[in-house]
Image (cartoon, rainbow, N blue to C red):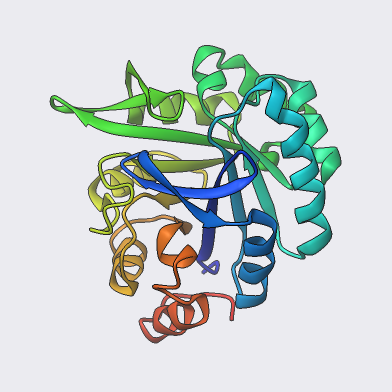
Length: 251
């Protein structure tokens, strides 16, 4: 069995790492380059950086950050936020990113997934999906969770796989920042319906939450932010606990 991955996520705004609850009430969590180095030293398997307020003006700032991170790291890292074209992705790849994450742009133009997969390889393309329970359905949300769509989450993920997405980063907005555990029901359904890796995101609050998501769903990785940023869970301790529960991890 492949090792399960532990992935700290750094939401970046104006060059700083921030974290909120349910996608709002952001507070500062430190310098992203410094945090990235610390996580690599602690044994993180990968990192994800999301430019949560990406605009053209900030693109240069993000590229400089990617270069700085690439100089510090020996583990893969993914960059997302504001990527709308092959040129955007190529610039980030050339700066040192290993993968790119697309969200809103892919919903607006699903063929972008195909274009990126053909240009750089399927493994380079991570589809980020922000989902929220509305009525009796899980619906995809865009623009950092601010814009609801009528697109059902499971339907969209299957379409994205068909278009060439190599991996799904699925964030439950309902669970995000609550520290009440991952949305295991949704994650289990999604994992059973597709054949590409799924990263669980949203809700990690304890070591037990990571054990649950790996034992109750088919996810390949679990992503978290605040529990790592504020020292509530140390990655070496987390991996030791996972191993004790017969969950394969890289130590």
